[in-house]
Each structure stands twice: as C-alpha cells, then as structure tokens.
Length: 270
Image 1: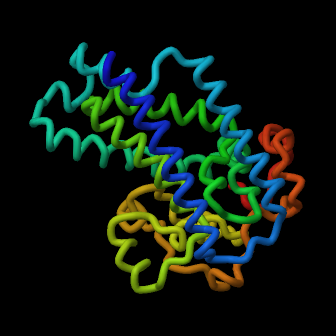
Image 2: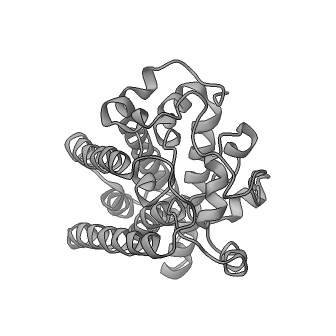
C-alpha cells in the first residue's frame, strides 16, 4: 500500500510543479500571441480537469499503480509471466504503455463515436499548458479503462506505471504549452520527446495536419507508423488552431465542453 500513497504525493506534487514552471515559461517566452480570452479558456479548462478528477475518484476503486500491484501479486501480464529483471521491465513497461496511448489517440481521431468525445480537446482555439488537461470526462474514463487493460496484458512493474503516469501528465502539459524553443534545440529535443512545436501541428484546423503527430511523450511512434508531420503548411505563426465550426471562444465554456459529444459532427471527423 505504501507505493499507492507514494503515487498520490508524487503525481500531485509533480503536476503542480510542472504546471507552475510551464506557466512561468509561457509568460516570459511565449511562442504565439493568444487569440482568445485566456481567462475564459483557463476557467473552463481547469474546472473541467477538476471535474474529471472527481469523477474518476468516485467511479473507480482501482487506479493504474494499484492495478500493477495486483497484476504483480497474481502474476498477470507478459512481464510478470516472463520475468527479465526490474531494469528492462521498467523500460519495456514505459515504452509499451506509451505506444498504447499513441494508438488510443489515433483511434479517437479515426472512429466517429470516439472523435465526438475527443473534440472537446480540439475545440480550444489557443494552445497553452491548460490545453494539456482539457479532456472530456468520457475520454478520461475510456483512457483509464484502456490503461488498466494494458497493464493487465503487459504486466509492467508498479514503479514503471508510476513513472509513466508522471511522464504522460507532464508531457501532455509540456507539449501543449505556448513555449518558444529555438529551432536547433527543438530539432534535438524531437529526437527523444514530443515538443510543443511538433504537437501544435496536430491541433491545426487543416484535417491532414490534425491527423498527424499523435504521440504524447515519445515521438518515435509517429515516425514508425507514418503519422509524423514536421511543420504546419502555414507555419506556426500563421496556422489556425481549432476546429471548423467551433472557433468561437464560447466552446471553451465548461457546459459546452461537456455537451461536445452530443453536438453534430464536424468536417474534421472521419
């Protein structure tokens, strides 16, 4: 049980520290001039995140690290059935979980019912650190179920799951942040992680751009599976962020984000 208590401290502490650092970085080194009301967007995005957190805690008695502990105890999952040592197991566990999230993200774009849910994330007309926590409750529930299923199949060590959860949350905020990184440094960082400039392409209003760069933490899956796109056609300063038909800031209101799955399809859907 100690690792579960440790998980809460590590995840909460890392979230707050990363969030605060990125807010400071965005303030002093902005990448783009924001086009919509930051106050309106932040209110909706942050409260949606708090709402999601409450929903998940009320609905699920078991979270990823606890699931990994259960799998280790029962011997479930490939890495528990074929033990290869803690170091390789942690590395393979983190890599496998990140690959699962890549495919989950791609499916949310390619399957119409899932896309209707995921649109709440893409209707943000600016990108900053709060976009990285802007997800519909249905998506958060489905994502948690996917992670629990993946953990049962893979059997990663609990510490690998904790590392992955911190990495996923931190990288989601980082690669959605409005931080200016020089082109040379961005090129170097893209070798090992998804950068803000890389992920921003995914939020383009242009369909062929929004269906690229699905990775959250590691960029390798996009290269491996042919979904990588280096730059938006209009450039990062000229590109339009958001969805056709949803460019009004009113879609950043909490109630409208919650209703997004029930609104008619958009041209960005499959």
